[in-house]
Amino acid sequence: MPMTYKKAVKVKTPGGKEMDLTPEKAWTLAPKGRKGVKIGLFKDPETGKYFRHKLPDDYAV
DNA sequence: TTAATTGA
DNA sequence: TCAATTAA
Image 1 (tube, rainbow, N blue to C red):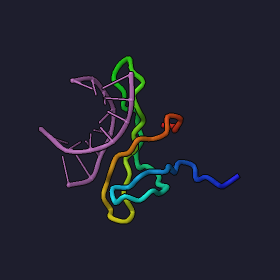
Image 2: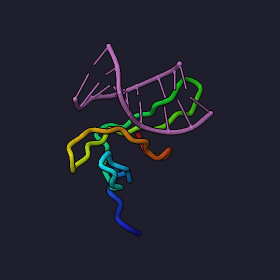
Image 3: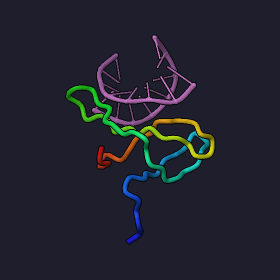
Image 4: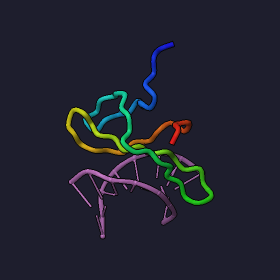
């Protein structure tokens, strides 16, 4: 099986590229009584710009 | 203080 | 519209 770095996630950067990045922070964004989504804070290594992106539902937060 | 992130 | 988070 391919080596997977512990917390890297496939994300679409603001620059429009799909790449594996590790979020600086990750948390659950959910209204009370609803499932919500997991969100990660990333920095695009190309531009240095910060952006938020959905994480897989099974991502360990 | 706000934008931006999902989706029920 | 709601939820948490934080760079800008």
